Length: 343
Image (cartoon, rainbow, N blue to C red; front, side, top):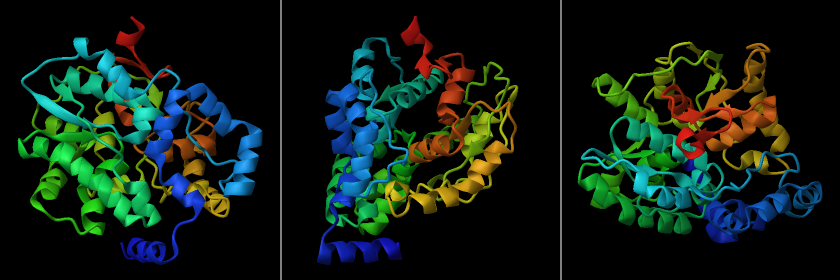
């Protein structure tokens, strides 16, 4: 917090570099790229553009940048499938975050499938970026605009007693804690939202402890190394993803105790920080390699950590909600798709 506040003062006095300004606008980048995802992916990932991005912008040539979904955004899928979505007296609100919206819509699809399987109608209200990239940049005024918007969109649901769950653990931490604390926002609506937000596995574990989580799991015979991201640990709720995954028959989930994957949001994307980030992440990469040649994928709750992990060990990484959806027989873990969409 001290570091973030100092950075905000520096930004207020000296401005912000173009690179940081660009990296802090992930929602805008996601929106623009989603209109022409094939072209956007080519523009971002071809060797010439990556070389120029490093030389001109200072964005590391080898950094694990995301790819836009070429099958449409999560929001478009949810609207298209609305007619077949579950209607129920039990309701839950879903905060998807920018990465799920534009880059990994399959995460949101898996979350909806799991929530509906447990008898909950999923509400996806209007929402915007949680503001974390701008908080990290020290752009507190812009971050405050984002957070105020989300308070206006979501606080009424929390006030009515509906849980608001998210699959991006950095987004949920921002809504719960980082934005209210760093922005000194403690009004009634902000506090209602803060108290109403859950990481999705934190909430699913509550269901399990109440005897309300469906446990009709199909076995998954797999060794799946799991890494709890730094921001997940900052929730101070233990490791609920691990607790739930360990209920799945046949699934072996060795736990990483590595201190950090090294990406630290957008830190590892910066040319001068990339090698530091990879050196920090080596503790995690080594842990995965030590699990043996039979490991075919890993699991992690944070999108940027998954991308870094994939970059460091050259294996696919999955969100635990995908694993849970697969164990319910709703999701293809390899193809990253709902079975209902393939039918």
